[in-house]
Image (cartoon, rainbow, N blue to C red; front, top):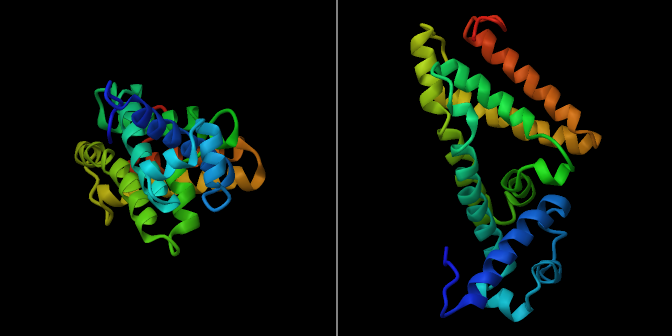
Length: 211
């Protein structure tokens, strides 16, 4: 992703502002309902600047998914759920962290790439694939801890670290849908509580035993 430079500050600034506008507006309105005019107005740029940077709305969608992956990767990498020494504690801390950040307006805590993937999976394969790279890329960051916890707890079930990592994301994305459908963030937090219980059940630990 190009960074603003002294030679082209307007171009770099316009691109980032458009990506930030896409991040916020698409989560609130959906991809189809988000217009180029919406994006340009929010980013305070001209349509000429939009098409200079992206060429089309679909190209903006792909870039927005990539921007989301880039910015959220740093956010999760710096999060405190990595701190516990025990692998299972780290997994449970991850679930607790995801629950803790379900706060504020629905659009502010829901997932851009999950929102777009649901909407455009058939109509825009390029955006769908960019969303998939973001979701599955994040999923992969959980696999090492899950595998270590399986080893530490002697778990030899017919499931894999990869499949449980994917399941965590299925619950989280589904939780966002429930929160939107019910207009209530508490519905999403409830789902994360059940995910915590499910993981403890898989590893045969009670709530107090994982600490």
